[in-house]
Length: 172
Image 1 (spheres, rainbow, N blue to C red):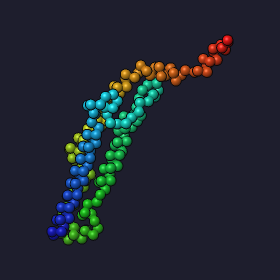
Image 2 (cartoon, rainbow, N blue to C red):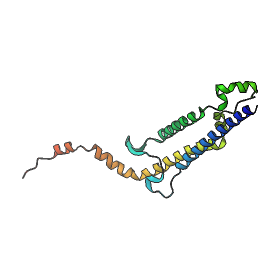
Image 3 (cartoon, rainbow, N blue to C red):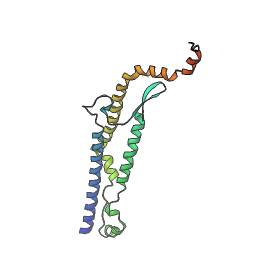
Image 4 (tube, helix red, strand yellow):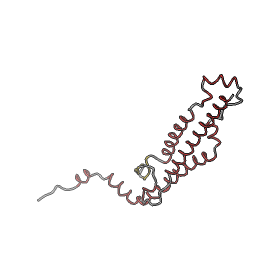
């Protein structure tokens, strides 16, 4: 009986540790995405994007939607790997104890705990808020470059050979 209770205690400790790890990691990601107050220009955020000209307007590569999708995919992959860590009670060699001592229920699975963890869910929302804020700040910053955009587009459309053909040949 003691062994079965000890195994269940180990399950709870493992699940609690994994839950704490995920919440802590999520908090670190949120802190990393915090805009830096002492930075200037485009360096205020920590997201690496490029300013590109697309369809004759300034935009970012990757876009906000692509950035959110990439970060979400990476985070989901990390969480799925952690959620797949088996608890002690699912070990085949321990099933005899669960039958002998009639465990009423196994430990609550980590995915269910994470879905109901208010702090974790609020941190996930804050990640999206920080990414949106970063792109809003960056978009506001690139507006100052719109004056240069027209000149850039004119220069890229400028045909040097056409102008050379129109010029009369040089005479000395």
